[in-house]
Length: 289
Length: 222
Image (cartoon, rainbow over the protein chains, first blue to last red):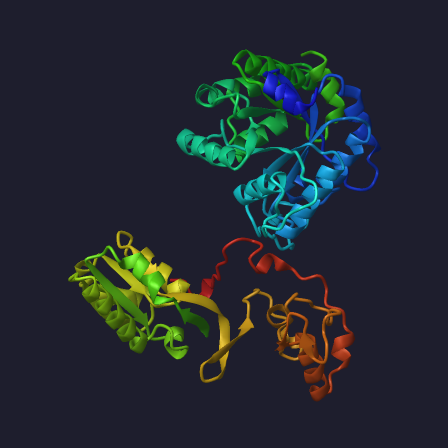
């Protein structure tokens, strides 16, 4: 059953983030994905996360799709103008990518090519509209295309992030939903209570909230996030728990598993597991779910 | 200078048609030189607005004032005592002046009366052309003082593209190929060997890549 049908049927969906390689050797990416493919519904392929140059999301998606694994290809507005974005969307559609997640993309100053000039010819909302147009058979210039893609489109939301207005986020979700977005991926969530207001007010038949469950790797990482990422709420109890644990890595895996269970119990219809380079740990999480 | 072009009167009317009073605010600097927003243009726009309101049978107080500069808080203080007599301001300054006026008077709506176009110069009366994009890292020393960032449609830094024909750019036969200009100029200066030197991949972080920019001179700060 394809991802869209699973969403339609209201099934609980597990996504796993799978970053493409920085190079042409995709063997590790493919083998990590293969190891968990029976328990993961689709792999989320980021488009040069944090503006770090690596294989494109389209290339990464292809590596998994040709092995029979479904993907959500992220596409960002930072690196391409409207011609290139639409061209790559057509390429993705023709190559069998069925799901697209649209973001604006972080500024190049975050990444490893900080002298690069960002494009931002169009933004997330406009790109969602462009996807809608392609699905209906026309490009952004209004020209008819030959064969339309049947994408399931989605985007991101700051639901659950600290310092954000719930009302404004819900309004943004609505705007993007009207532009064709069906699913919304959140930043890492460590306290399921923070997304409760969204679950209560979003119609899950129309818009699907996908909290990100980030696998913490160490006490240092948890502390760093707590100090330097003010939009992410990391409860002190989690930090203390890692601090006290004799096997910190195992504890971090346990925390991720418990978070997925708690989110599921709260009525969430999908989660995205993000392991940031520790994809070999994905199996430990998904096999326990 | 910053070159601006007058906005169509219909667009300005659309912004101000519901007001009971409006101040048309000009600027004596760049927009005066390029004849888009100086004292003369303030008078013309104010008269056009008065005629419009008269035709609509409405009594609207249209004020006129031109500041020495709108990009300077000192000069913006000049209207502090009479700005409250107006519901809103139509600023004929460049985008900088419009925003600075709005920042200085936070509760006053400020509408743009011009389209700010570029940094350029007058080629002849009534014709202005772009010469600088403010990329923050000037390379004119190596290009014979002809800017490829501004004058090449593709911002190419190492010679022309394949679309350069008979010294003209592929986008229009009315546009000079920047690299033709650069080569001609280097020849004149006897420095054609500069053309052989490869320009490294440009650092765009001093352009807009790093977000809105600031220049800070610690030696001048009080």
